[in-house]
Length: 91
Ligand SMILES: [Zn+2]
Image 1 (spheres, helix red, strand yellow):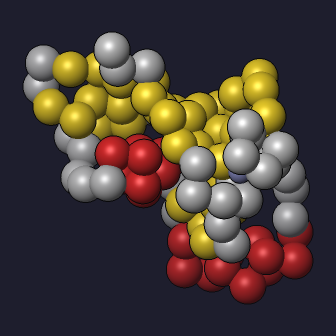
Image 2 (cartoon, rainbow, N blue to C red):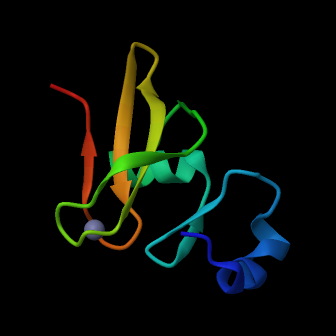
């Protein structure tokens, strides 16, 4: 969801990346979103997209990001914008 009032607060320091989104009240870029999903550092992350689904936990909007947690692995992660719910496409 677009939240211009939140952007106004955070924009001066974090607007260097064009793909920032608000997740649980914080501005995150693709790398930070991937780190939230992975619960650790990632090597590289694609841009953030909107997942075509609702959060099964709270019904909120879900973001999608593809990232590489390691050189040999590419994962698509999902993260709710409103609560702690997250998921990856790992087996
Ligand atoms: Zn949720």
